[in-house]
Image 1 (cartoon, rainbow, N blue to C red):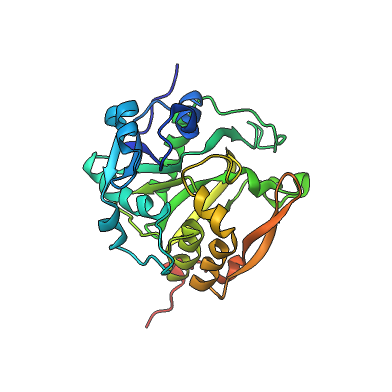
Image 2: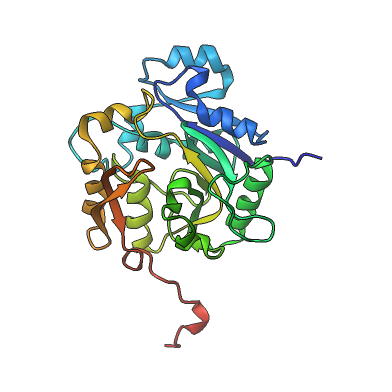
Length: 296
């Protein structure tokens, strides 16, 4: 019997100038992987393709005021443009208006969701089997978030790129969580936070905010695969084509210079590209239980 989606939960997909069905890869992926709960496409009111979104998806489209949202947080530079950080920060109000306490915010270019460990808690190959009951996965994550201390503000799935290096990769040695969160943020509207900066906003968020005692976690039992950068128009593609990835990575250095530096990352074709590198013990302080506090 198929499981039910979590209560008071919805999936919100950030999308820009990609109204065609073939461009909505995440929407197709979550449906194929068994998610049956509410799902919405989050589009700003300045998107020139907004009428096409509404014509194609109807009530699944939610529109937010772009400029009013930008005014709510630190955009972090004077280069112009907006980026995916704006809808990320708009979703909180959207979720409340729709009556959802919990939600996941997703980019629109995910290909699939997969298990990376099997039922015996052993790692499986890079071509591991696709999830067929995403309702169950989201329910487990919502229960996990609800059971954590209030300092924990979001949980996330692992990414395919986290497993570079194959069988020697640290994430494949045992099941654990890491103090990071990217792309698949699972959130609670009663634990709100704002993403800072126009570029690399997810990295800015988990590095800058964790230094203030706000915790984020990713687990690598389940992962998602994402389209290669700049393989389809819309989204952030034009920004990356114009600027490359140096400004994107250096934004996180500016926001957290003690724990982030510019490095490089090799993709599946072994072509290195500019990327950030995080030193986690400088951005994710450990929490000591209050029971160990010395009396005054």
